[in-house]
Length: 357
Image 1 (cartoon, rainbow, N blue to C red):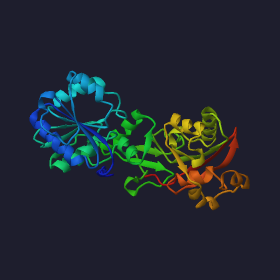
Image 2: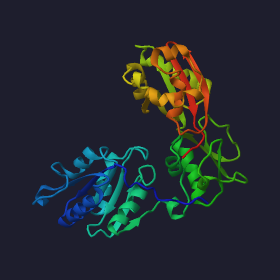
Image 3: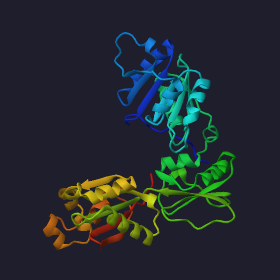
Image 4: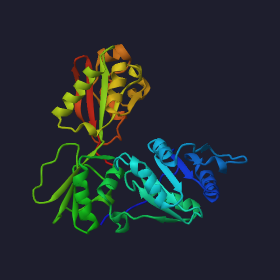
C-alpha cells in the first residue's frame, strides 16, 4: 500500500490569508505571520476595533459583512486560515465553494493555537500538507480527516498532484479512490518512469490508474481512471508576424497525429530572439502554459544532438531552434518524438519526457 509523505512547502512563495475577529486570535495571527513571512507572503484580516499599536505585519480591516468579505477574498488566496469557530467558517465559505480543483486550501484554528484543522481542499489545494506544516511551526496538533490519509493510502487526486498530472475525469477518480481507502488492490499502468513509492502490481487488481498522455484502452472488468502527465514540450520557431491561431493549429495538428492529449503539454520553448513574437507568446497564453526561451549560447551547448541547418545558422546564429529548445525545456529524459517539421510558416518539434515526478 502506498504511504503518504508530507509535501515540503518551505521556501516556496505561497499567499496566505489569516482571518480573525478576537484579540486572542489576532495575537495568534501575528505569531503565525512572523513565523511564515520569511518564506511566504502573508496578510492578516481583522476588525477595525482590534487594530492598535505598531505591527510589523500586513493587516487589512474587514469593513463589509463577514460573509461578503469572505466571498471577496475567497479566490484571491491559495491558503486561508480562519482563527475562529469551525461553524462560523463553514457558513461563511459555503456560498463560494466551486470545485476541489479550484477552491483554496482552508484551515481552521482555535485562538490558543492547539489545533490546526484541514477543512477544505485537503488534497488538490494542499490543505492537509499545509495543516501539518503550520502545526509543526506553532507546535500544534494537525487535524486531518480525509480517509486516504487516515488509512495511510493515497487518493487519486493526491497522486495526480504529486506526479504533476491532470485528472481526466473526477468521477472515475473518486471510484478508484474508494477502492483504495477500502483496501482493495489498485494497480498503476504506465509506460513512463514514476517514483518507486507509487509502483503498484497489476496482478489481481480491482482498479487501474492509467498514467499516459494518450487515451488508454478500456478495461471492461475493472474500474479505471486516467491521469495525464504534463511531460510534453513543444519547441517552436516561426516567420515574423505569423498569427497565434496559425501556430496553435499547427500544434493541434501534430498533437492529433501523435495521439497526445492537449493537457500533456508542460511548456512551449523557443529562442530568445522570438521571446516577443506575438504569435508564439499568445499561443502559450491561450493554452495557459509557460513559454521558455533560450539564448544562442544555451542552444549551442546541445545543438550537436540534433539535425543541423546551415540556413538557420545563417539567419539566427545556431543550427536549429525548435529541437534543441524542446530538449532544454525538458527534464533531459525521454526522446524527440517529432523531429522538426515546417508548416504554414511554423517550425515545430516535440520532446516527450520519460521520468514523471
